[in-house]
Image (tube, rainbow, N blue to C red):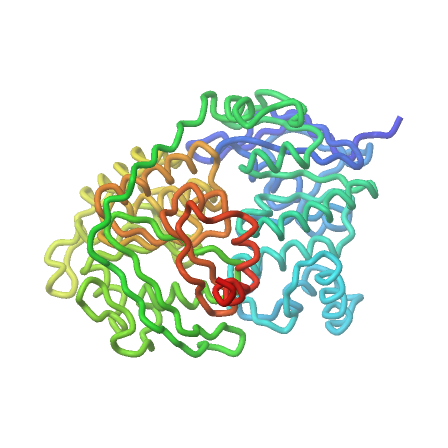
Length: 508
């Protein structure tokens, strides 16, 4: 009989205050696509890092292709034939795509050979990327493509994918699934983590469910529904999202003919962006990553203040060249797509990460500084942790120690808790489990119903269709006309992602 590709028995890993994995057993056969399902903080990513050698287990055994192995680091894992695409990317910002990939492939290849391989693999799998671009110029979606290509170039026997489609468009997901099914048919085993239940049902042969770090069940996902998988994962049915008719107020954000040259040679020029968001509505922006969303977000948040005066108004105030702090005083709160590095300082505790955008706990802030009331700050962080069900050891837990989904809940919660007048959020439920995603979307709709103007940029069309009252599509630095959500279809939005709305407007 063919031995399992991977067999784990009794894997246990503890951190101060939390048991991430408790006596976990898992078997993956050759050519099998095996889902690992669980809510945020269930121990999925820790288990994958143990398999990949990035984390050492406290107890348990691991067998690969029928023999016992002790993987001490990712280099040993890759030598065995194990590759991993992390949810939080492991890329160096200051070097190019090709140089990042080269680092993981060994010294026997030249940089020119690696560059050629990247281009070939990207074309083969429809994951277009420029090998010469520095990583710091890439969007989150483009970084994810780099991680996937780097893993594929190692010709793995076991490929671990941690939320690989979280910022990919439906078209890109379809292409990726073709790739994964082909790899599986050739004998590659795949461990697949995703909170998108329909993906697991379509792609995976087996599903292992983790709850609180323990295996609570194994099933055939094709025989399950989204509802039964949700029950297995969170122990309850998903709450239904309640939408009310919007009660529109005055425009709280007006962008008029915003044209902005790219800040670097790999960026995207913004070309005549015109946009309005009124109090009491959610406006969505769809589009393939790398089409100007990053540049638009920098301009909206105040990180880029080169906009022409008069091109961006909050209410009646011209904010085109106003810094982020000034915009926050007017009621703008903002969630960037990058959690670690821009949304949170990795090595700071959650409480002190509040100080990035919230100053209620600072005494005498109008004098340009002041004492931090630490007790008040920690109480504020604890309140957000409770309200948004963030799994953390407490307000002093460092941001880096949280799972991706739990950190996302905290960052979104930090900004929603500020009761903004204008809320701009990018990828609101990236890497968040289905229960937490439902909560975040419900909180966004509550903000809208309370009179907040909400702008959502997301690469999940399902999310945009659930939340938006109107929809735009971004392509090549341009923004489509507004489309009422009742007239939006996946097919139409997909066509507009290629910039084809001009043809439709002409024919109309």
